[in-house]
Length: 322
Image: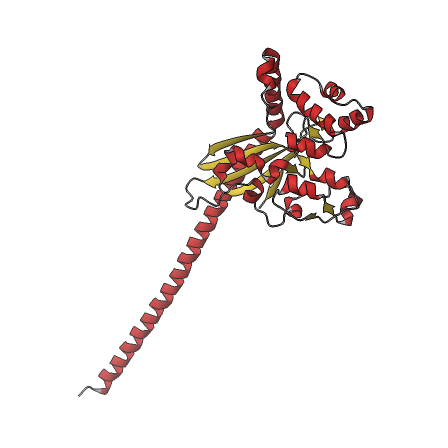
């Protein structure tokens, strides 16, 4: 038989084993929690580092490429006008330089796709809304031709009282115009690489803008934008004269171009207020993606807008993010 002392010793040993197992289990839980916290901290640190690198890439593009967009646009126009002087026939069948440029870069392990637009080569929706201050519905023609050609209903826009009181532009974000639309939808693309393809120039943001002073660049504005802007303002013949002359006689100044296109002095005065030869607003769409990311469909999108300051000096690029 087992003695009482032996039984007591066995019970004590069992308790010690049980306590040891419980402590080991608790230690495992604690170490597991620490490991998870370390893993979470590492993921957060990586995400923060990645966001910082992407922000650096965006700022680099905005301060180097966007800030010099006006100079490059003027160079393209100058080359086109110079080619006309050398060979009038060759230039007369070539459209003026487009109001956009595209680029792709690799910066410190990041893939960057971008498009810089001349915002004053587009139909300015704020200008159209200012022209009808008591209306909250955009004209259907603007919706059909500048916003969404397949849209059958009018576009309802809100005009907060403080906007008018403070003298601010009525529309300051695409979310006011097309709520819920992603950058891809606004750009008419399904992947960032498509930003470099010509078909993206038919997208919503290629035809309309919320930025700029409301004038339209006579050289970079597309024909359909010019027709839309001048609809019901001047005679159709004047519009077609203007579009034809800017291609046939690109060496002319804006004033001479308008004088030759319009016979009526009131039309000439109106056209002088609508058109410009030098744009003051440029926008840059950016898609930035880490080369090591497995999910190729989720780059970081942003829109940067640069508008001329009141002192005619370039302003600071403003960021719009989704």
